[in-house]
Image (tube, one colour):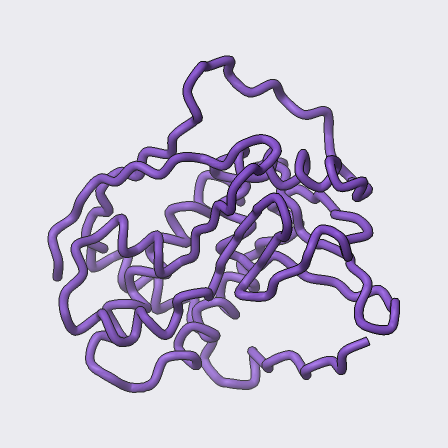
Length: 232
C-alpha cells in the first residue's frame, strides 16, 4: 500500500465567498499516497460523499442546489443522522458502486477505516456535534424537494464545525431559514483563514480490517437503492 502523508486544507469562509468542497475520494487522495491500482476505482467515487458550499450553491453527494431555490436547512445532531445501520449501508453502497477491478478492496478498506475513525469519537456520545442534515428547496414546479447529507458529509461537518458554520451562515445571507441549530459556539478569532490539518492515515490493522468487514451487510437485501424521484 502507498506511503502515508499529512495534508493541509483551508477551511471555508463564513459565509462562503468561494466554492469549498471535499469528498471521500478527495480526502483519501490527500491522506494517502495512493497505490496505482487504487486510482481507477477511487476515480469512480469522485463526488461520492461530497459536501460543498459556495456563495451560489450547496451540494451533497454530487447534487447541487442553488441558494436561490433553497427554502430552509435543517440542523440535527450527527448521532441522529449516522448510526451503525447507516455505516453498514454505506459500506455496502461503496461496494456496489465499484466494479470488481484491482484496487477495489484497497479503496473499500481505507474508506471504511476512515469513516470509522471519524465516527468512533462521536457516535458513542449523547451528542456528537451539529450537522446540516437536509436542504429543502423548490423543484421545477415549485414543489418542495429535499437534499440529504450523506454519511461522509455529516461526519465532515461534525468533525470540522467550520464547514457547518459556513453552510449555515451562507444560507442566512440568502434569506434561507435555519431549523434546529443550537446556540452556535464562537469561532476562534484569527487574522488568517482556519486550516484543516489532515494527519497521516495509519495502515488499517488486521483487527480494523476485520471490523470493517464486520459492518458489511451479509446480503444485498439490507441496502436497496432509493427509487429516483421525478423532477418537480
